[in-house]
Length: 294
Image (tube, rainbow, N blue to C red; front, top):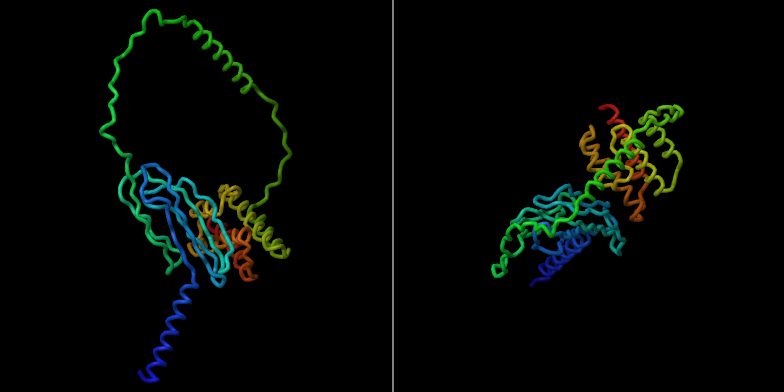
């Protein structure tokens, strides 16, 4: 082989190695189950894992439903710092009441990153033809010697009725109305905007900044739309917010801001000032759109 051809082959090998190395350093995802065959109604653990390098944005799967399967438990996402970046993991307990051969579909983290599909068999419990049958027994007549004095039943019924009358009297008797001082009504929109402006100018700690920002939004949607989310996880909030009168693009920005808040609070992710500004703008613009379309 000539020197020119050898140099070309060597250069091509270097390019292929670099491409493979770069691909190996990218985001990797996988989905597994602890069993591929289950009885109807039996729980199965579905594990989702995403390994994200340091130079890529933090994101995770958003799973609303799985055909032929139901969610039993959907806990919060566990986050772990690794030598290469960040690992996100969620173990979801699912089950199925539809017998047959099904496939858990591939989940996408983004347009070019998918998990593998998972085949699942949902079956009934095995029938043992050698097991003895239980004959149907005849109706047994009560013999005179088994009959007992049942007068105590009437005393019990009378005592129960009397107790019920006393309870109803205590519950329904009129109570003196408690006079409460009038509370000045505060407009939820003005309250939320004022809170966001104060937060933006306060220069608070990152975790406190994101926690306070999300709390302001939770209180607003609770007062304005009756969506009680103060004790909900981020995934539950995102599900509840699907019906909000906002554009799809704004809904995506809002969802990313809420998830970013979780990563800052629990994953030791250090956001940039640009991240802070975008997250605050997403919350503020969502509130404005809700007010305009209410």
